[in-house]
Image (cartoon, rainbow, N blue to C red; front, side, top):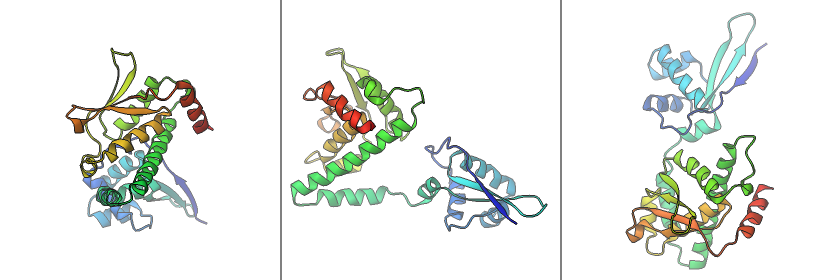
Length: 251
C-alpha cells in the first residue's frame, strides 16, 4: 500500500528574486502533476545534483512541497509539486494586467464611480498589508492598538521593505511627530497615468491608513517636486477615534 506524507518547509525566502534556473523548475511543475527528481532531470536536461540544489532552495522558499511515497519495503520515493505560493510565483508577471486595469479605472467617466472603485482597491490593499504585519508579529507582541503610531509605521516599513519599496520612518523636529517616507515611487507608471487628479496619491493615503489603523495624509509628494512622498498623522483624526477603529479591526 502506498502512503503519501506531504511535507513542506516553513517559507524562508519567498520574497527574494527567483533565479532563472529556479523559474525553469517551477515552470516544469505548472502542469499540476507532481514529479520525481528523475522526472525533473529529464525535463530540464540537467544533472540530478543540479535539480536537488534547486529543490532545496524552492522548498526553503515555500514554493514547492514534497510528498513521500512508501510502497512495500523498498526505498521511499519523493515527488515534488507546487504550493499555492509556488503557483503564484510561477505564473505570468501581473504588472501588465495591473497597468491595464488601472488605466481602465481612470477612464471611467463617472467620477463618483471611479472614486468608489479606487477606494475599494485601497481598502483591500490596506487590509492585506495589515494581515502581513500581524503575520510577522511575535507571540508576545502587544496588539496593534497598544502600539504608538511610530511603532506601527516601523512595522509597516518592514513589510514594505520586503516588497522592495524603499521607506524610512523618522520624527520631525518641528512637531515631534513620526512620518513615513517613501523614497521611491512603488507604482511609477500607474502614478503617471493618474497624475492629473492624484488618484494614486489618494489610494496610497487610504491604503496606508487602513494598514496602520491611524488616519495619515500625504504631506509632501514627488509629483510636486519633492524628493520623496511623506505621510504623516492627519490632524483631523483623534487618537481615540483611531484606537476605536483599530480595535474593531483586531476583533
